[in-house]
Length: 254
Image (cartoon, rainbow, N blue to C red; front, side):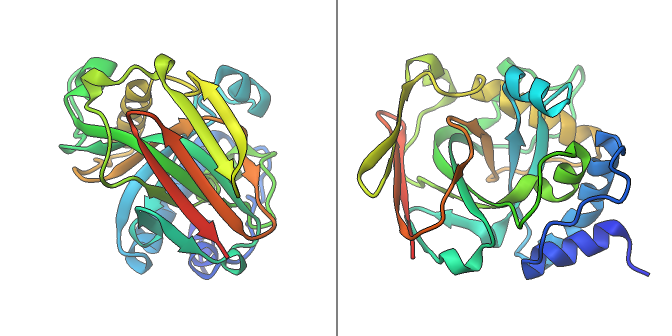
């Protein structure tokens, strides 16, 4: 008989509805146990692991969701769009997007004495650039954090700028202005919109994955947290994100 994690893996590969845990009181670690069992199965079907993501990395969100720390997930290689992309709304059950800064790793984030910090993470990142996280709620609810973690935090991929970016030492997130447009209409125009310093997000992801025996690899794309609330999309359109000096990326949803 298939385990819960194996069923979630098949759900993700086939685009089936969100599968909550039977025990709605299960702790967050039970969700991670399922996610880390699920991930290699999905990776085998989707070209491997291409990146990682962090979620709920604002104190207000953590309080709202009843968790003590941000949550993390996997991004599968076949779900990554390098540069501008054409997507089909019909391929998703409940399509949503989030604009983010992402980190491109220069080296593996292997376990290190004392863990990863902002300073050590800076030595591991080749550059930062802009990205859209693609998400699919799959008719699910975020009410039970462990179920959300088990289902890979709704991730359905990402699109990122492959040409532009900044080295870590040149990044000042508080000074960056994020502009997002939907069919030419500005839906976000904010300065300092990153939920936390992207290097702190990289360090947190490295430490959590290392604690589960996993080493994020050089070349992976790490999503560092959304600059706006989760944005649902129910009709075709074109989305553009730009941060002056950092990059620009867009996708068309048909």
